[in-house]
Image (cartoon, rainbow, N blue to C red):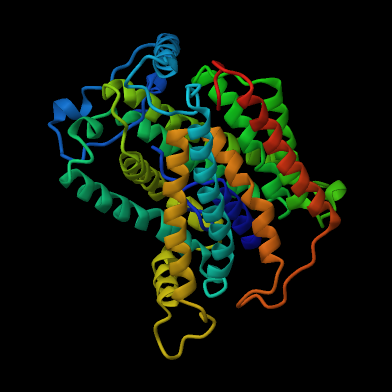
Length: 447
Protein backbone atom coordinates (compact mmCIF):
# COMPACT_ATOMS: atom_id res chain seq x y z
CA UNK A 1 0.00 0.00 0.00
CA UNK A 2 2.87 2.38 0.77
CA UNK A 3 4.21 2.00 -2.76
CA UNK A 4 0.80 2.80 -4.23
CA UNK A 5 0.36 5.87 -2.08
CA UNK A 6 3.86 7.07 -2.96
CA UNK A 7 3.10 6.64 -6.66
CA UNK A 8 -0.04 8.70 -6.24
CA UNK A 9 1.79 11.50 -4.47
CA UNK A 10 4.59 11.46 -7.02
CA UNK A 11 2.07 11.80 -9.84
CA UNK A 12 0.42 14.78 -8.16
CA UNK A 13 3.84 16.27 -7.64
CA UNK A 14 4.51 16.04 -11.38
CA UNK A 15 1.41 18.11 -12.01
CA UNK A 16 2.85 21.02 -10.22
CA UNK A 17 0.96 20.67 -7.04
CA UNK A 18 2.54 22.12 -4.01
CA UNK A 19 2.87 19.00 -2.28
CA UNK A 20 5.58 17.54 -4.20
CA UNK A 21 6.76 14.61 -2.38
CA UNK A 22 4.72 11.85 -1.18
CA UNK A 23 1.24 12.02 -0.17
CA UNK A 24 0.97 15.12 1.51
CA UNK A 25 2.41 18.25 0.28
CA UNK A 26 -1.05 19.41 0.23
CA UNK A 27 -0.02 22.89 -0.34
CA UNK A 28 0.28 22.36 -4.31
CA UNK A 29 1.80 24.53 -5.54
CA UNK A 30 0.64 26.47 -3.37
CA UNK A 31 -1.49 28.71 -5.04
CA UNK A 32 -4.42 27.51 -3.15
CA UNK A 33 -6.46 28.39 -0.87
CA UNK A 34 -13.45 30.12 4.37
CA UNK A 35 -16.36 30.37 4.53
CA UNK A 36 -17.55 27.29 2.77
CA UNK A 37 -20.49 29.17 1.36
CA UNK A 38 -20.49 28.86 -2.41
CA UNK A 39 -20.61 32.54 -2.99
CA UNK A 40 -16.95 32.03 -2.47
CA UNK A 41 -16.81 31.14 -6.14
CA UNK A 42 -18.08 34.60 -6.73
CA UNK A 43 -14.67 35.61 -7.88
CA UNK A 44 -11.21 35.77 -6.33
CA UNK A 45 -9.51 33.68 -3.85
CA UNK A 46 -8.51 34.19 -0.36
CA UNK A 47 -5.57 36.15 0.74
CA UNK A 48 -5.39 36.37 4.43
CA UNK A 49 -4.26 39.56 5.98
CA UNK A 50 -0.61 39.71 6.67
CA UNK A 51 -0.99 43.04 8.33
CA UNK A 52 -3.66 41.88 10.80
CA UNK A 53 -6.71 43.99 9.86
CA UNK A 54 -9.50 44.83 12.22
CA UNK A 55 -12.27 42.24 12.72
CA UNK A 56 -14.58 44.36 10.58
CA UNK A 57 -12.10 44.39 7.69
CA UNK A 58 -11.21 40.79 8.22
CA UNK A 59 -14.71 39.38 7.92
CA UNK A 60 -16.49 42.15 6.03
CA UNK A 61 -16.18 40.38 2.68
CA UNK A 62 -18.12 37.31 3.80
CA UNK A 63 -21.69 37.59 2.60
CA UNK A 64 -24.29 34.97 1.88
CA UNK A 65 -26.21 35.44 -1.37
CA UNK A 66 -28.03 32.53 -2.86
CA UNK A 67 -26.09 30.01 -4.90
CA UNK A 68 -27.80 30.93 -8.16
CA UNK A 69 -27.17 34.64 -7.56
CA UNK A 70 -23.53 33.95 -6.74
CA UNK A 71 -22.93 31.94 -9.90
CA UNK A 72 -24.65 34.60 -12.00
CA UNK A 73 -22.48 37.34 -10.53
CA UNK A 74 -19.40 35.17 -11.11
CA UNK A 75 -20.13 34.77 -14.81
CA UNK A 76 -20.97 38.43 -15.33
CA UNK A 77 -17.84 39.55 -13.54
CA UNK A 78 -15.71 37.05 -15.41
CA UNK A 79 -16.96 38.31 -18.77
CA UNK A 80 -16.00 41.82 -17.75
CA UNK A 81 -12.55 40.61 -16.73
CA UNK A 82 -12.07 38.74 -20.02
CA UNK A 83 -13.03 41.81 -22.04
CA UNK A 84 -10.62 43.91 -19.99
CA UNK A 85 -7.73 41.58 -20.57
CA UNK A 86 -8.47 41.08 -24.24
CA UNK A 87 -8.66 44.77 -25.07
CA UNK A 88 -5.68 45.78 -27.21
CA UNK A 89 -6.14 49.43 -26.21
CA UNK A 90 -6.12 48.82 -22.49
CA UNK A 91 -2.82 50.03 -21.02
CA UNK A 92 -3.43 48.05 -17.85
CA UNK A 93 -3.82 44.73 -19.59
CA UNK A 94 -1.19 42.17 -18.79
CA UNK A 95 0.15 39.28 -20.87
CA UNK A 96 -2.15 36.47 -19.89
CA UNK A 97 -2.89 33.30 -21.75
CA UNK A 98 -6.39 34.41 -22.66
CA UNK A 99 -5.68 37.87 -23.94
CA UNK A 100 -4.65 37.21 -27.53
CA UNK A 101 -1.35 38.99 -27.18
CA UNK A 102 -0.68 41.50 -29.93
CA UNK A 103 3.02 40.67 -29.99
CA UNK A 104 3.16 37.00 -30.99
CA UNK A 105 6.98 36.70 -31.28
CA UNK A 106 7.62 38.15 -27.82
CA UNK A 107 4.79 36.11 -26.33
CA UNK A 108 6.05 32.95 -28.00
CA UNK A 109 9.56 33.55 -26.68
CA UNK A 110 8.17 34.06 -23.16
CA UNK A 111 6.16 30.85 -23.42
CA UNK A 112 9.20 28.89 -24.63
CA UNK A 113 11.51 30.19 -21.89
CA UNK A 114 8.93 29.71 -19.12
CA UNK A 115 8.01 26.27 -20.41
CA UNK A 116 11.62 25.08 -20.61
CA UNK A 117 12.29 26.26 -17.07
CA UNK A 118 9.11 24.62 -15.76
CA UNK A 119 9.82 21.34 -17.56
CA UNK A 120 13.44 21.27 -16.35
CA UNK A 121 12.39 21.81 -12.74
CA UNK A 122 9.56 19.28 -13.10
CA UNK A 123 12.01 16.63 -14.31
CA UNK A 124 14.47 17.41 -11.52
CA UNK A 125 11.59 17.40 -9.04
CA UNK A 126 10.43 13.91 -9.98
CA UNK A 127 13.92 12.43 -10.15
CA UNK A 128 15.07 13.98 -6.86
CA UNK A 129 11.86 12.90 -5.15
CA UNK A 130 12.68 9.30 -6.04
CA UNK A 131 16.26 9.76 -4.82
CA UNK A 132 15.11 11.50 -1.62
CA UNK A 133 12.99 8.47 -0.75
CA UNK A 134 16.06 6.23 -0.77
CA UNK A 135 17.27 7.42 2.66
CA UNK A 136 13.68 8.16 3.72
CA UNK A 137 12.13 4.98 2.39
CA UNK A 138 10.63 4.28 5.81
CA UNK A 139 9.52 7.89 6.30
CA UNK A 140 7.69 9.13 3.18
CA UNK A 141 4.89 10.48 5.36
CA UNK A 142 7.42 12.59 7.26
CA UNK A 143 8.74 14.08 4.02
CA UNK A 144 5.19 14.91 2.97
CA UNK A 145 4.44 16.70 6.24
CA UNK A 146 7.76 18.53 6.10
CA UNK A 147 6.94 19.99 2.70
CA UNK A 148 3.36 20.83 3.66
CA UNK A 149 4.05 22.64 6.92
CA UNK A 150 7.63 23.71 6.25
CA UNK A 151 6.68 25.53 3.06
CA UNK A 152 4.15 27.62 4.99
CA UNK A 153 6.97 29.10 7.07
CA UNK A 154 9.18 29.62 4.01
CA UNK A 155 6.47 31.30 1.94
CA UNK A 156 5.31 33.59 4.73
CA UNK A 157 8.91 34.57 5.48
CA UNK A 158 9.38 35.57 1.85
CA UNK A 159 6.02 37.35 1.89
CA UNK A 160 7.07 39.32 4.97
CA UNK A 161 10.28 40.47 3.31
CA UNK A 162 8.43 41.44 0.12
CA UNK A 163 5.89 43.38 2.19
CA UNK A 164 8.71 45.26 3.92
CA UNK A 165 10.15 46.07 0.49
CA UNK A 166 6.71 47.33 -0.66
CA UNK A 167 6.58 44.71 -3.43
CA UNK A 168 3.46 43.32 -1.78
CA UNK A 169 0.89 46.03 -1.05
CA UNK A 170 -1.83 46.35 1.55
CA UNK A 171 -4.45 45.95 -1.22
CA UNK A 172 -2.99 42.57 -2.18
CA UNK A 173 -3.17 41.37 1.41
CA UNK A 174 -6.77 42.50 1.78
CA UNK A 175 -8.15 40.41 -1.09
CA UNK A 176 -11.04 38.12 -0.04
CA UNK A 177 -9.69 35.21 1.93
CA UNK A 178 -12.59 32.84 1.34
CA UNK A 179 -11.27 31.91 -2.09
CA UNK A 180 -7.84 30.91 -0.85
CA UNK A 181 -9.63 28.84 1.74
CA UNK A 182 -11.70 27.11 -0.91
CA UNK A 183 -8.60 26.22 -2.92
CA UNK A 184 -6.88 24.84 0.18
CA UNK A 185 -9.95 22.77 0.98
CA UNK A 186 -10.16 21.38 -2.56
CA UNK A 187 -6.51 20.38 -2.55
CA UNK A 188 -6.80 18.76 0.89
CA UNK A 189 -9.91 16.91 -0.23
CA UNK A 190 -8.12 15.83 -3.40
CA UNK A 191 -5.28 14.38 -1.35
CA UNK A 192 -7.59 12.59 1.07
CA UNK A 193 -9.74 11.00 -1.65
CA UNK A 194 -6.65 10.11 -3.66
CA UNK A 195 -5.07 8.37 -0.69
CA UNK A 196 -8.22 6.37 -0.04
CA UNK A 197 -8.38 5.27 -3.68
CA UNK A 198 -4.63 4.58 -3.89
CA UNK A 199 -4.87 2.11 -1.02
CA UNK A 200 -7.15 -0.12 -3.11
CA UNK A 201 -5.76 0.41 -6.62
CA UNK A 202 -2.85 -1.34 -8.34
CA UNK A 203 0.21 0.90 -8.60
CA UNK A 204 0.27 1.45 -12.41
CA UNK A 205 -3.40 2.49 -12.42
CA UNK A 206 -2.82 5.45 -10.12
CA UNK A 207 -0.78 7.74 -12.43
CA UNK A 208 -2.88 6.69 -15.43
CA UNK A 209 -6.18 7.62 -13.77
CA UNK A 210 -4.58 10.85 -12.57
CA UNK A 211 -4.20 11.97 -16.20
CA UNK A 212 -7.86 13.00 -16.07
CA UNK A 213 -6.49 16.09 -14.30
CA UNK A 214 -6.03 17.90 -17.63
CA UNK A 215 -9.51 16.96 -18.84
CA UNK A 216 -11.02 18.39 -15.65
CA UNK A 217 -9.01 21.56 -16.12
CA UNK A 218 -10.51 22.08 -19.57
CA UNK A 219 -14.01 21.55 -18.20
CA UNK A 220 -13.59 23.87 -15.21
CA UNK A 221 -11.85 26.62 -17.19
CA UNK A 222 -14.74 26.56 -19.68
CA UNK A 223 -17.29 26.79 -16.85
CA UNK A 224 -15.57 29.13 -14.39
CA UNK A 225 -13.44 31.25 -16.73
CA UNK A 226 -15.82 31.22 -19.72
CA UNK A 227 -12.95 30.02 -21.86
CA UNK A 228 -13.46 28.35 -25.23
CA UNK A 229 -11.14 25.85 -26.89
CA UNK A 230 -10.78 24.91 -30.56
CA UNK A 231 -11.19 21.31 -31.67
CA UNK A 232 -7.46 21.19 -32.35
CA UNK A 233 -6.71 22.20 -28.78
CA UNK A 234 -9.13 19.66 -27.35
CA UNK A 235 -7.74 16.94 -29.62
CA UNK A 236 -4.20 17.92 -28.61
CA UNK A 237 -5.05 17.59 -24.91
CA UNK A 238 -6.71 14.20 -25.47
CA UNK A 239 -3.72 12.91 -27.47
CA UNK A 240 -1.28 14.25 -24.89
CA UNK A 241 -3.19 12.71 -21.97
CA UNK A 242 -3.41 9.38 -23.77
CA UNK A 243 0.30 9.50 -24.55
CA UNK A 244 1.22 10.09 -20.92
CA UNK A 245 -1.07 7.25 -19.85
CA UNK A 246 0.53 4.89 -22.40
CA UNK A 247 4.06 5.93 -21.37
CA UNK A 248 3.35 5.56 -17.65
CA UNK A 249 1.45 2.32 -18.08
CA UNK A 250 3.95 0.69 -20.43
CA UNK A 251 5.19 -2.54 -18.98
CA UNK A 252 2.01 -3.18 -17.02
CA UNK A 253 -0.74 -5.55 -18.05
CA UNK A 254 -3.24 -2.87 -18.93
CA UNK A 255 -5.95 -5.37 -19.80
CA UNK A 256 -5.86 -6.84 -16.30
CA UNK A 257 -4.86 -3.69 -14.41
CA UNK A 258 -8.28 -3.02 -12.89
CA UNK A 259 -9.44 -6.62 -12.88
CA UNK A 260 -11.26 -7.35 -9.63
CA UNK A 261 -11.14 -3.72 -8.48
CA UNK A 262 -14.45 -2.22 -7.36
CA UNK A 263 -15.57 0.72 -9.56
CA UNK A 264 -15.65 2.98 -6.48
CA UNK A 265 -11.85 3.22 -6.22
CA UNK A 266 -11.14 4.38 -9.81
CA UNK A 267 -14.00 6.85 -9.45
CA UNK A 268 -12.46 8.23 -6.25
CA UNK A 269 -9.12 8.65 -7.98
CA UNK A 270 -10.78 10.54 -10.82
CA UNK A 271 -12.64 12.68 -8.25
CA UNK A 272 -9.29 13.42 -6.59
CA UNK A 273 -7.96 14.75 -9.90
CA UNK A 274 -11.11 16.84 -10.29
CA UNK A 275 -10.54 18.49 -6.91
CA UNK A 276 -6.93 19.30 -7.76
CA UNK A 277 -7.89 20.61 -11.20
CA UNK A 278 -10.63 22.78 -9.74
CA UNK A 279 -8.16 24.26 -7.27
CA UNK A 280 -5.69 25.09 -10.06
CA UNK A 281 -8.36 26.88 -12.12
CA UNK A 282 -9.47 28.86 -9.08
CA UNK A 283 -5.89 29.94 -8.56
CA UNK A 284 -5.81 31.23 -12.10
CA UNK A 285 -9.03 33.12 -11.50
CA UNK A 286 -7.47 34.76 -8.44
CA UNK A 287 -4.83 36.37 -10.67
CA UNK A 288 -7.35 37.45 -13.29
CA UNK A 289 -9.79 38.92 -10.81
CA UNK A 290 -7.05 40.53 -8.73
CA UNK A 291 -5.97 42.60 -11.73
CA UNK A 292 -9.41 44.22 -11.71
CA UNK A 293 -9.51 44.66 -7.94
CA UNK A 294 -5.99 46.10 -7.91
CA UNK A 295 -6.62 48.52 -10.80
CA UNK A 296 -4.45 46.61 -13.25
CA UNK A 297 -1.61 45.84 -10.84
CA UNK A 298 -0.20 42.34 -10.92
CA UNK A 299 -0.84 40.20 -7.85
CA UNK A 300 2.37 38.93 -6.28
CA UNK A 301 2.56 35.13 -6.50
CA UNK A 302 3.79 34.85 -2.91
CA UNK A 303 0.45 36.17 -1.70
CA UNK A 304 -1.21 33.19 -3.38
CA UNK A 305 1.53 30.77 -2.37
CA UNK A 306 1.56 31.86 1.27
CA UNK A 307 -2.13 31.98 2.02
CA UNK A 308 -2.87 29.01 -0.19
CA UNK A 309 -0.28 26.90 1.59
CA UNK A 310 -1.49 28.17 4.94
CA UNK A 311 -5.08 27.10 4.38
CA UNK A 312 -3.97 23.85 2.82
CA UNK A 313 -1.81 23.07 5.83
CA UNK A 314 -4.75 23.90 8.11
CA UNK A 315 -6.98 21.35 6.38
CA UNK A 316 -4.18 18.79 6.29
CA UNK A 317 -3.84 19.27 10.04
CA UNK A 318 -7.55 18.61 10.46
CA UNK A 319 -7.27 15.49 8.29
CA UNK A 320 -4.03 14.38 9.94
CA UNK A 321 -5.50 11.65 12.19
CA UNK A 322 -7.27 10.14 9.20
CA UNK A 323 -4.25 10.43 6.88
CA UNK A 324 -1.93 9.00 9.53
CA UNK A 325 -4.09 5.94 10.10
CA UNK A 326 -4.41 5.47 6.35
CA UNK A 327 -0.61 5.28 6.17
CA UNK A 328 -0.62 2.64 8.90
CA UNK A 329 0.66 5.01 11.59
CA UNK A 330 -1.62 5.19 14.67
CA UNK A 331 -2.09 8.78 15.75
CA UNK A 332 -0.61 7.96 19.18
CA UNK A 333 2.64 6.88 17.50
CA UNK A 334 2.77 9.80 15.07
CA UNK A 335 5.04 12.06 17.22
CA UNK A 336 7.57 9.25 17.60
CA UNK A 337 7.40 8.51 13.87
CA UNK A 338 8.02 12.16 12.99
CA UNK A 339 10.96 12.40 15.40
CA UNK A 340 12.61 9.33 13.87
CA UNK A 341 11.89 10.71 10.41
CA UNK A 342 13.56 14.01 11.31
CA UNK A 343 16.59 12.10 12.64
CA UNK A 344 16.88 10.17 9.39
CA UNK A 345 16.34 13.33 7.33
CA UNK A 346 19.26 14.99 9.11
CA UNK A 347 21.17 11.69 9.30
CA UNK A 348 22.21 12.30 12.90
CA UNK A 349 23.33 9.59 15.28
CA UNK A 350 26.30 7.28 14.78
CA UNK A 351 24.14 4.20 15.21
CA UNK A 352 21.65 5.21 12.53
CA UNK A 353 21.62 2.95 9.45
CA UNK A 354 19.61 2.96 6.23
CA UNK A 355 19.70 6.76 5.89
CA UNK A 356 22.65 6.95 3.50
CA UNK A 357 22.31 9.91 1.16
CA UNK A 358 20.69 12.16 3.77
CA UNK A 359 20.58 15.04 4.31
CA UNK A 360 21.92 15.94 0.82
CA UNK A 361 19.30 14.13 -1.30
CA UNK A 362 16.23 15.23 0.73
CA UNK A 363 17.49 18.83 0.89
CA UNK A 364 18.10 18.91 -2.87
CA UNK A 365 14.57 17.67 -3.38
CA UNK A 366 13.04 20.26 -1.02
CA UNK A 367 14.91 23.13 -2.69
CA UNK A 368 14.02 21.92 -6.18
CA UNK A 369 10.41 21.38 -5.23
CA UNK A 370 10.10 24.88 -3.82
CA UNK A 371 11.53 26.31 -7.04
CA UNK A 372 9.24 24.08 -9.08
CA UNK A 373 6.09 25.20 -7.25
CA UNK A 374 6.97 28.87 -7.59
CA UNK A 375 7.79 28.51 -11.29
CA UNK A 376 4.61 26.61 -12.12
CA UNK A 377 2.48 29.19 -10.32
CA UNK A 378 4.27 31.88 -12.30
CA UNK A 379 3.29 30.07 -15.52
CA UNK A 380 -0.32 29.91 -14.29
CA UNK A 381 -0.22 33.66 -13.65
CA UNK A 382 1.34 34.59 -17.02
CA UNK A 383 -0.52 32.12 -19.21
CA UNK A 384 -3.05 29.68 -17.73
CA UNK A 385 -3.42 26.61 -15.55
CA UNK A 386 -3.95 24.45 -18.63
CA UNK A 387 -0.70 25.64 -20.22
CA UNK A 388 1.13 24.94 -16.96
CA UNK A 389 -0.23 21.39 -16.92
CA UNK A 390 0.68 20.80 -20.56
CA UNK A 391 4.31 21.80 -20.14
CA UNK A 392 4.67 19.91 -16.86
CA UNK A 393 3.22 16.74 -18.37
CA UNK A 394 6.07 16.82 -20.86
CA UNK A 395 8.36 15.99 -17.94
CA UNK A 396 6.64 12.68 -17.19
CA UNK A 397 8.21 10.46 -19.90
CA UNK A 398 11.56 12.28 -19.64
CA UNK A 399 11.79 11.68 -15.89
CA UNK A 400 10.72 8.04 -16.34
CA UNK A 401 13.50 7.60 -18.87
CA UNK A 402 16.09 9.20 -16.57
CA UNK A 403 14.98 7.00 -13.69
CA UNK A 404 15.45 3.94 -15.90
CA UNK A 405 19.17 4.75 -16.19
CA UNK A 406 21.79 3.79 -13.59
CA UNK A 407 21.92 6.64 -11.07
CA UNK A 408 23.73 7.23 -7.78
CA UNK A 409 21.94 5.13 -5.14
CA UNK A 410 19.95 3.52 -8.01
CA UNK A 411 22.67 1.64 -9.90
CA UNK A 412 20.45 -1.17 -11.20
CA UNK A 413 18.40 0.89 -13.71
CA UNK A 414 15.36 -0.54 -15.51
CA UNK A 415 14.22 -1.50 -18.99
CA UNK A 416 11.44 0.32 -20.81
CA UNK A 417 8.73 -1.19 -22.98
CA UNK A 418 8.37 -0.18 -26.67
CA UNK A 419 5.04 1.31 -25.60
CA UNK A 420 7.01 3.93 -23.68
CA UNK A 421 8.37 5.39 -26.94
CA UNK A 422 4.89 5.28 -28.48
CA UNK A 423 3.40 7.15 -25.54
CA UNK A 424 6.20 9.74 -25.62
CA UNK A 425 5.65 10.41 -29.32
CA UNK A 426 1.91 10.80 -28.69
CA UNK A 427 2.68 13.31 -25.95
CA UNK A 428 4.78 15.46 -28.28
CA UNK A 429 2.13 15.19 -31.01
CA UNK A 430 -0.50 16.35 -28.53
CA UNK A 431 1.58 19.41 -27.60
CA UNK A 432 2.08 20.28 -31.25
CA UNK A 433 -1.64 19.86 -31.97
CA UNK A 434 -2.51 22.14 -29.07
CA UNK A 435 -0.09 24.99 -29.83
CA UNK A 436 0.12 25.15 -33.65
CA UNK A 437 -3.44 26.43 -34.31
CA UNK A 438 -3.00 29.33 -31.89
CA UNK A 439 -0.45 31.10 -34.09
CA UNK A 440 -2.83 31.15 -37.06
CA UNK A 441 -5.84 32.71 -35.35
CA UNK A 442 -5.68 36.35 -34.34
CA UNK A 443 -8.14 37.74 -31.91
CA UNK A 444 -9.16 34.37 -30.53
CA UNK A 445 -8.67 33.32 -26.95
CA UNK A 446 -5.45 31.49 -26.38
CA UNK A 447 -4.91 29.21 -23.40
